[in-house]
Image (cartoon, rainbow, N blue to C red; front, top):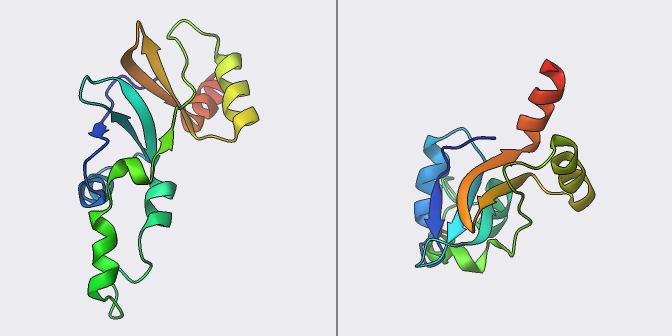
Length: 128
């Protein structure tokens, strides 16, 4: 589990998500509401599918860059599956595989305490 997570708010613009994704090596942002409760996940894949493929190219038009003005809640996955910190690694693996997802936010008493990704699980199995 990774305990240093980056969050983004539901009404933030995709331009902020772009700035974050352009400067980090991870692929999931946890989306929170005004009370800091988890409401969704913005994956890098979801983010890229919401943007115009012309952004950053010679073919870029104003309408292409306007896609960066969309709000996170318009693109994110809502009501994500979560897991508790004490849950078994096999359960986390089964949830990720059965639901074809890339990560599980880790919650304790409705507070975000971390995130576990398929890469974390793969590393744990490899090192076991």
